[in-house]
Image (cartoon, rainbow, N blue to C red; front, top):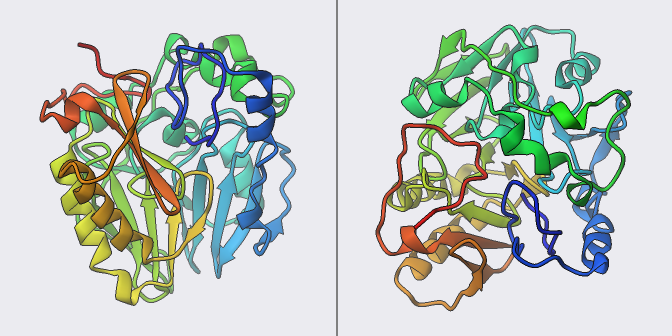
Length: 334
């Protein structure tokens, strides 16, 4: 989510900085692809896996960022390893086997927990036997999967920087249904052996959004609540009031944090960005900063290190249906 340049029209989802209504010159696609793998990963140790679709990096002790840089969402999943168990935070696009890649990184039992249930974070869920999830109507709706008609553009040539894995059938690409085997709520503590992960409910981007906190290590996994790219806050299920409260909650942790670990584009960000994010969203809602109109009734507001892409209906106080689910690609309709 989140390519910083225009991509061709016709994708099933609207891009973070894209105009879906006008096809850009080919140079725009080339410029985006030239950005990946992004330079911010260069200081990190790359960990080899057999699949050419994933690039994996060791971001901290026992923490692996599993990136998918060749598709414009540039989604990042995280494997968090303890001495007894491992936790996989998101399962990516579902384009190549996440379970196979994870099996190359650890032999421990693995539980899955999603930062939220948009399609690009649950694509590999069905490959795993142990899936923890929020108990919300939105989560239940999304666990049914997403059909090809919603996702077809996500594997079209304009969404990709390299060939899809051998044997992948782009004409049938969809998200398989998955079944939660356990529930988490705000404050749930997940014991991995020598490592405790706390679940923080951070609704706003979606009703079921969570962040993960490792207090001992000073790590906060922010999902789509913060990442160093255009942050999508425009789908009907977004709740701006809840988002502000969630950002404030995370920002209060900044003095005790070493790293933010976001779900798109760049793995590691400075904790102070959460303070900047709180100021930014308040300034936007108060009308103190100018924005740039984008297609789909959206407007983008740029700040240092990130931008906010909001729906005009949400800015004007309208509310969408936060129970029926959504792939993350749905724009408002008048």
